[in-house]
Length: 139
Image: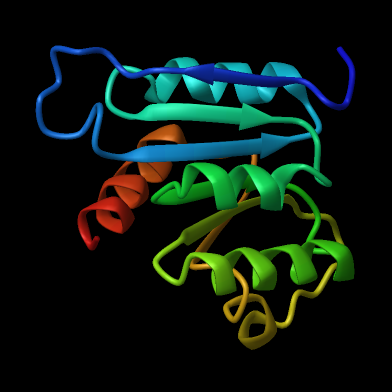
């Protein structure tokens, strides 16, 4: 798949509480990972997914999601993008999935100024789902 793939999937109409009123943007360079998460959440939320990091701030600006789930390294470029997106949408919650490896030390104070919650991969979907509900229900 190309790195500029963008797909929108709407939640099911039968979930009256959240399907049309709450939305999640999924970002990962791995299209299959995005697609899997979109299928997992599509029965409860409106899903917008992208594999394009450059387009991500524009998508967040245009769609004003409640939550961004990002499967990415927390590089300086991503920190700038997260900061920009939060300026545009101060209510945006950001969840980060990251690959943990021996010797990697993320300064937790530094990380939490950019993201609300983070999970090492592989992720526990039940724990992720609980955190998604908590974050979205605070809005």
